[in-house]
Length: 346
Image (tube, rainbow, N blue to C red; front, side, top):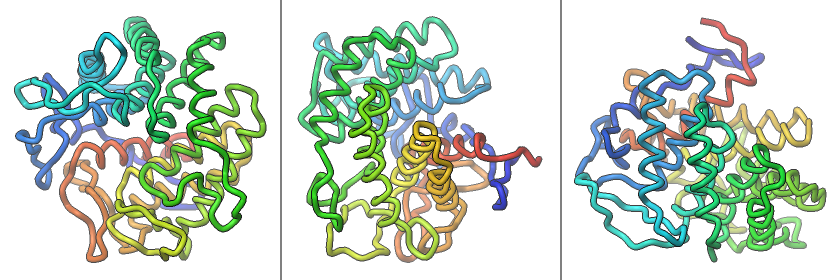
């Protein structure tokens, strides 16, 4: 089954086949050598949070995909300690390799728990998501990316329970952690350099401004996202910030570009369109979908049609053909947005 963008190309439906092939009873393996999971590298909470999010966003998940969602929830709950902090690295034998903390894996867990609390298909999933969310938000992170991830979970929880005090408090703290755009129109970004999951920072402000009825915060988020989309558009396609980041003097195209940046752009622009009602934000979603379809700096399709795995990045010579979990989830997440913007053709 495929879908077609309005006036644009045919887009495949999101497929979980490769993600399922990369998974076992513990979780989804983080890395791959081409399509084969690199089991020795184990699993990570970052990926399992992403897995849970894309599973609960599926409108009609198959039994195997629903089972993957249960695995992801179990993994995330076991990553928490009694204080609500999270661990990230886990070996193939199930043992944990790192200490508890409140960095990105904590923030992504909060996002996944909140999404499950709001969108989970089963009562147990919603209840466990809400309970684990409440446990996690006893903490705060000093990393503004982690707070941005967590803010997305808090916004989801407020859709399920508009009076959830903890979610509201977390959103306010995330606004403070991210900060305001600078006064420099050439570089309004609230950090000296762009780094990773950049559009998520703007999305967090959009979500917080909407949920807390703060039009000033909403506008700040939209302004940052508008600037980022313009900066990352080159000759009509996305030219993403590379893995090493970018500063005011850097000129596109730059490499290594990561699929997570395209997925973050799709999520942020989809939210901006939903919150503001401005259909022009749909252009950003379409550009992100197009990046995976081959409308990018090297003209390369960014997934394997045979396995449904997403390629790990773009170099100046072409795609990195390894099909890791993060890249595959980014592809699924982006293609999920195509459903709301397309008509079925196959």
